[in-house]
Length: 361
Image (cartoon, rainbow, N blue to C red; front, side):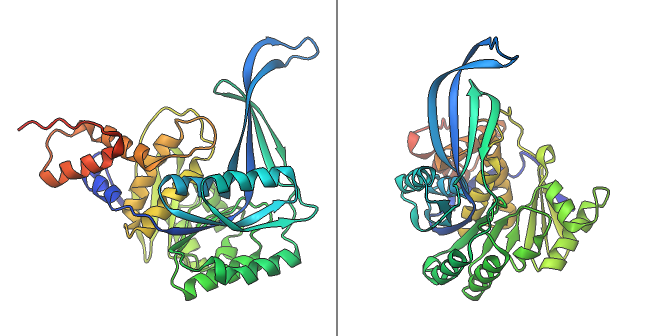
């Protein structure tokens, strides 16, 4: 097992950031609308012991696989979206939010008698009071599944990498996943999966699967007391995954590659404001990193940095390339001496906002 220090790899990481490039990503998964109702609480209701919220603002944002797509757009990639909405106002709003950011939405299918999934967060300042969900766990209809399979060859044209965002809402059927992964492998297109549920066999043959620690233990069937290395090796062998990236909350990220290589990445500590959508941000950054030819280790380190930004924002996290570069500069503050190439990398990371670098000889 190898553990990378939180500071010792920063110069190389900035160089990796500079190698990120635009590509074309196909985002496949469960689409949902994230609604936010913001307001102020100044008193308790006389009808029941609950706060009274005076509404000041309402917002709608693309969530689920849609949030992954928007994160990818913020990082400068072209994005095509493949998913499902209902024939309702919420579905139209969700599509409009994605189109507003120039996502290619021809792969968004509409299903009758299926309400678009909506998660409405009631917020008092930065405090979430309650979340009101409207969802119906309806499997993809047979007709739409056939249509999705028919569309696949067109959706895969020009794609550099596929990001699957599974929220277990019914779009990603076992048969659709089987065809998608097989078609991708035939075209040598990497497939990155953010999984859901107990059964990882539906992702058989994926290039990389990114569960959290609890999901990994559950899917392995080995139980909480099992060694994490054994859990990872069981999943890799049973489902023919190329590699695993297990997110471990405060313990950081553990990457497992065949045959039995493990690398641990300590968390980049920062104040937690809201963890909503942080997993989507990690999936997006990892996807861009691997599509740019970075190593899995470099991608995992960038994911750690991105997560430290995402948890400091309210609502579904969405970070830009410039924010990522700025955060790298902050993490560089403990270093005192840099070579010329390192300074060039730092200047590149500062981005177009014009952060000043003072050079002293």
